[in-house]
Amino acid sequence: MTAFPIRLGIPADAPALARFAARTFEETFGAANDPAHLAQHVSAAYGAEQQLRELSDPGCRTLLVDAAGELAGYAQVRHHPPPPCVTGPAPVELARFYVDRPWHGRGIASRLMARVAETAASLGGQTLWLGVWEANPRAIAFYAKNGFSDVGSTDFLVGPDRQTDRVMVVDVGRLVGARSA
Image (cartoon, rainbow, N blue to C red; front, side):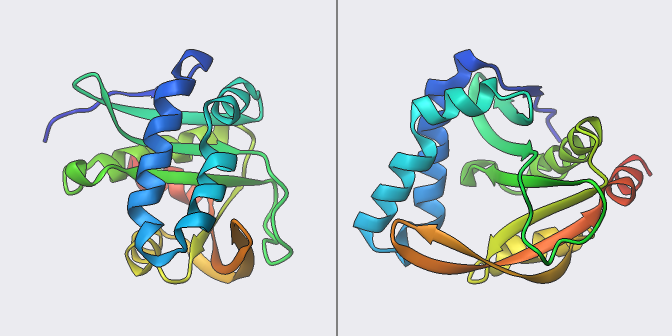
């Protein structure tokens, strides 16, 4: 297995991250969403200015996976108010987790999740939570394989389209421990 460096994103990464994030979101969810709604969401969530704000936010850490000088994946861990179904102590959110399709099956997701666990702990997190679209069984299975449990649901807007995300949680100490075993 080839080792791919994972590093903390910096503000100078904003333009490349914006392009990568928009493309991977569109590839993952485009076929199941109204194109106008998708474009509205992508514009608001993944523009270069938004990425710059997130990369500059001390309560938000974006991890970038480098493969031969190109992004192969990224994850974002941040302090963000959880939905009421997240009841564990010191919650932090896994807001984004994407590995580009050409890099699937190469161990990147597992290594990236290990860094997510370390990052959540470094932010003082004890409970890591995420929202995953209920119609994304591959992602739900991946998170379950990594020890996350389904604790409820929350709304997620793609443009004006209200969708349902499953909310999943894991104890950060358990995730860190599983990764170092």
